[in-house]
Image 1 (cartoon, rainbow, N blue to C red):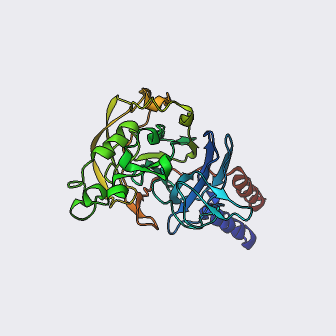
Image 2 (cartoon, rainbow, N blue to C red):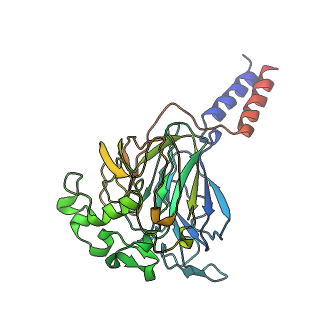
Image 3 (cartoon, rainbow, N blue to C red):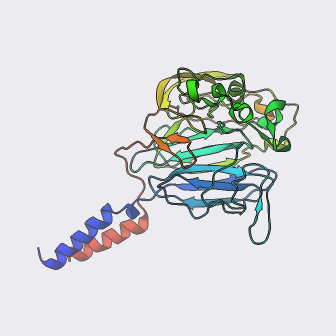
Length: 351
């Protein structure tokens, strides 16, 4: 083999091994609310920031971002924001405290509904929607183009309409978690309550779980709340059924039940620990359709996924936990441009 041919094959090998040859997930944010939402983005320590850390998303618009493989972090929606022409301002709920449109590495001030992700580097992605830090608006996460369970998850209920008086925040525009409201160890899963065996669901977390059966309701709510998919793109939709337009009198939660087997990691501000077990929540699993009052939303999802999965934990910059990264054999989609480049080099080398 002459030196030119050897150099060509070396270059092809480097291209095949470089991370840029593998496409990470695309995150698309969609706003179905009857008002503007300002999404915030916080990358985990060690993960590269996306193209924005905070932006304006008017009603009935969308915006997409490309994330590299292995990326982990969280998304949330800010509401009631007021930013001037220079991007300075603040928000009524979900404010990140940066004083700017961009959050610049700061997380959401509770209460806020969180969507959390850890992307695989050739294996499963882990994702969840968490109410451990409270709730400010409905959102769902849906995966497309992936393989595996890939169940949709989120909270379509308007919990602000059924929030107990002692948890209400931001002029009724958000609902605190019991930990945020009372600060006691049994609600925060801290101190003597810092394990799955000692920290149990409270009447408040059970209310969240009844309304939003696939969301984290407290720090150790792993079995029915962590989901997996391989090689998917993800859509995060705010107000998927415009619950802000529904009557505040329709406050009955969903009542169907399900049991699912799974493993995951606690999320939010509680001390999450990986656990495996059988959890019973409300809602539906498998091919069963979500239905019921759901605060008058009438939103339905059919999928064939479940919430089983396992993995380690990744510490976020703000001290919370995210479902861990699992390694596997399936690679993410390789871009067409990359394939063309490799094919061209291979032809040149063989001439």
